[in-house]
Image (cartoon, rainbow, N blue to C red; front, side):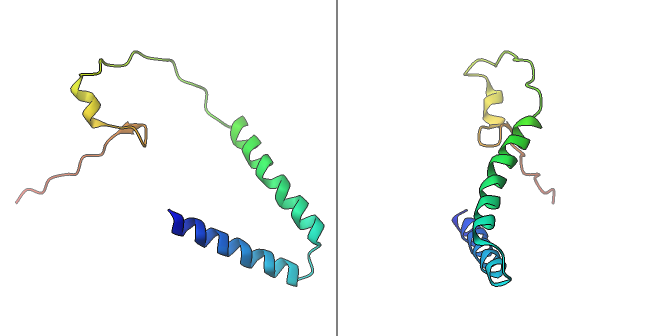
Length: 84
């Protein structure tokens, strides 16, 4: 996970360096990049799906909880067993 962040950060640094070497305005670059993040957050918030109806959860000792993956908020994909 940290490696992916480092790679993205390095690519961003290279892109910024290339833009500055190509003659981009420094103030315009900072202002433009500062506006992108709030715009993306706002667009994602406006495009979010409608919340579904709240259903009742199974009791805590129900065996179906063993198949639930809390990190992905869905059922676990069980590995298929090979026959043979």
